[in-house]
Image (tube, rainbow, N blue to C red; front, side, top):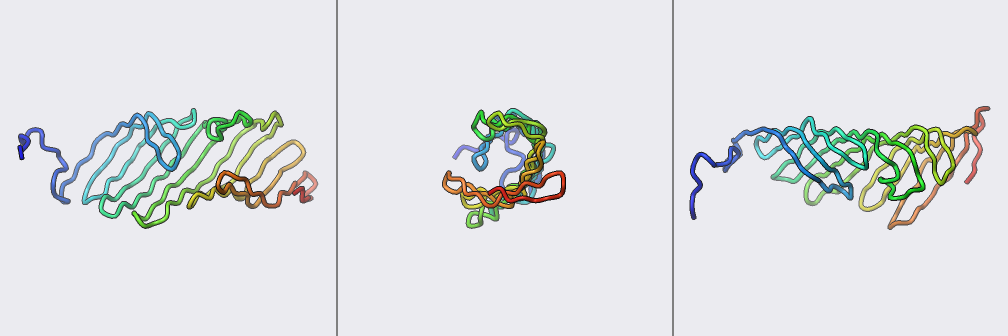
Length: 192
């Protein structure tokens, strides 16, 4: 085996006692069916744990800031992303929705035998869905084991706020719960 000269030996080589840090740059990263691009930030590595800070990049036509960590020994990771000005049509892969989205998303994994968990919240400003205008959308979501669930969803319109506690997408099919309309008079009417 040919040994590399000392001047090119990696700073983080061999032992878990090594420490290194620096800048990171990735053209793209695929994580849980999301495609992040133009990623830049800083990292710190020590004792098999790498932490990421000041990470920025692009997703769905908008930008994001992120922090996170990954443990090489047990493959545990934790990543928090704050997205701004995302294009809903790109995220939904549909031209039916037109609005800008703010997204807070958390990725969690407890190692090779742990569950992947992705959860967070979203909010929008004014927009349209199938040409029907709305003032805002907001809610929470979670994705675990291929089941994408939305909760505390509110769609604010000029006639009132539509609310739904839960709807899910399982195996590509939408499963809807009850939907209510809260009007300006304080009444809550079930519409589905």
